[in-house]
Length: 288
Image (cartoon, rainbow, N blue to C red; front, side, top):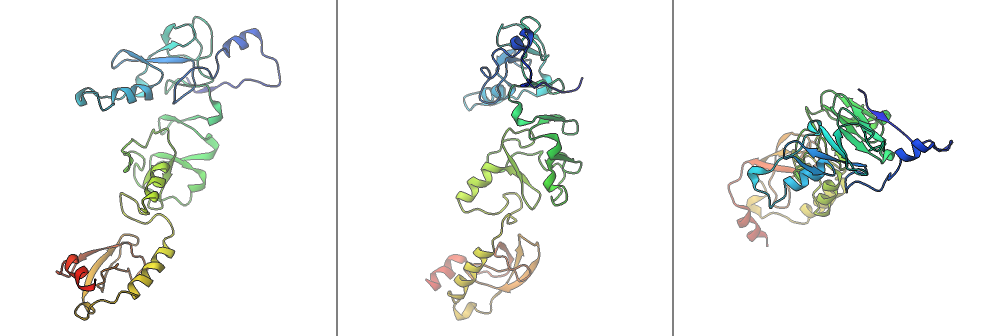
């Protein structure tokens, strides 16, 4: 059975049957979805508004760590109509009262949602439903996830790019309900987590340390800071080896306490990998 998307026609009046099917539309659901049914979790035999509500409840901090668990969407077999409380097998229309339990319904994901403005669609390769409109996304077989068509020729492929936890909030990225961004390095994380990092002046990928935005103005400021901070004579010819996080080039450069600049790409997003035995604390004390 394929996914179906039923939209209310606005050009023609609804029949009595159609009006009844739309009864309660938008008035039921939870913080995650508007829908006219609840789900029974086969793992714990409890009823929840949706699988996300189940996961939030069963993974709370006050739950015994050994008893925490998630509810896979494909495991849902039974739903309860929110209007007549009839429990039944997963289907779009209630077998008792005839109400539509979700204008968008996917029999593969056992998923219901009354808010069709999200333009939901099912991706067979991802194995889940996504939002945004099928025409606006493509599935990358290497990354094993869907990206915006605007990234089709420019994104950096990383095997199973979204099949990991966000490095900031540790929520699983692949099936998250939050907006996800693909960084220039190819790693993915929540957009809101990227904005949170920027609030703390962090502009590099937490996974590979590569800068994800134009840092040229920052590098210019560091150029001025380095130029205005002369090193003591005993350190002026001291050389160290660095690895650039942005271009991955190893170089031998003059040591400086403020920052170490990559001669290849002019980035200061570098780390010292060898050379120099004097501690930073001692050098700081000498130039203070």
